[in-house]
Picture 1 (cartoon, rainbow, N blue to C red):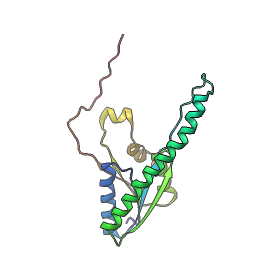
Picture 2 (cartoon, one colour):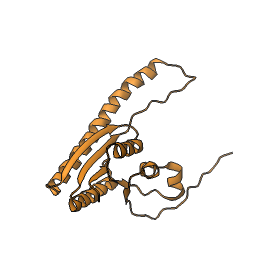
Picture 3 (cartoon, rainbow, N blue to C red):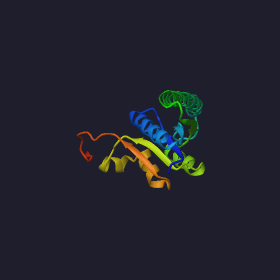
Picture 4 (tube, rainbow, N blue to C red):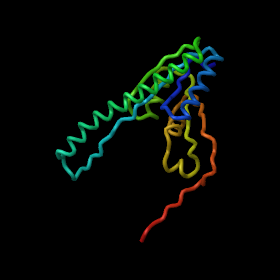
Length: 169
């Protein structure tokens, strides 16, 4: 049924649950499991009327350094996840990939271009109007992907299903 499973991980509790779930499915079905971590790109706001200044160029140089630091952190997340899966499921065919870009678009692109049969990922569980306003990576993946997506949702907590905005006069 699912020969190739892609699990998106970012080190969050929900992505760890998704990893456990994906590994269990892969083990049961004898599927190949790929762990994907996407490093979001650090962006620098461009203000068209501000022009370029020494501060902006310094910020651009710092941005490269920050991107490298983020890449190292996400590489560690990926290595830890791989080690955990290999120790708990030694017979499982596991591979890893680290990409940079917008997480939702990258997850969908990898799944579709590389022929995965299933995507498994965690979700923070932001629902209702808050989720609609803020959006989420998992929602964007579900909305834009043609592949089946299995979500590991965060448990519902007591929280309002709405957000109040107050305006000052």
